[in-house]
Image 1 (cartoon, rainbow over the protein chains, first blue to last red):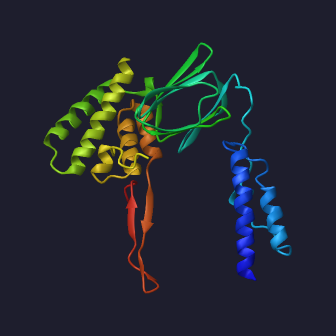
Image 2: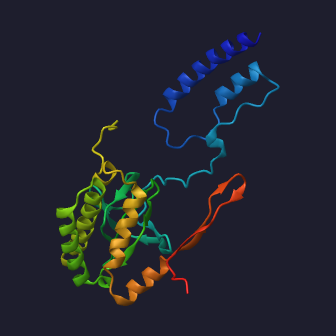
Length: 203
Length: 70
């Protein structure tokens, strides 16, 4: 009797999920996350048991993606010890992604970008604020919200150029004299970060 | 899927992302101008005591601190 039930259930679920898969091919917004055909099939087979919950029914609904692209990008820029920008509405941010400088406008494709040491600039009208980021991630959501997290972010005028030159020379020397893989990697990181700061200060 | 994508050099050398990120942050902090540098180094100081347990009893605690013990 139980074997029959699972066979009937799987047959009707297969039919239901095939139908619902084709009608909802690329649904980014699942309607209230309850599949009514599944629930009906379930109730026919096991009327006294509640239909099983799916993980999505426990999730809070995501902020809705507006149907027209918003005019401003909402930026949340946080560091471990402070929140630099919270929900600030800007026109554009340029982030130092590991694949190169990436410009983010409202309506950007949802992206998760790993950031490399480099400059992030926040453009608001004619106002541009630049920060040098040590590394981090940027999460760009479909509803034009950008969450940028970094470990260290300093305005460019907080940087001491002589220290940067000293550091660059020191790490280039370490790279030349490194023996183990780990030493080489650390020296390489040093060279990359100092070169990036140099480029940021001059560019 | 790019499961054979080129790994970053630091991961190939056995370093984790967190280690890499912390090294980058430390290097940036070392390049700051004076009042900001002292503030950031102060902010990042840690002080903790760690003890391993065996047989239900704590062993001798190890103290790790950036503030010199007087």
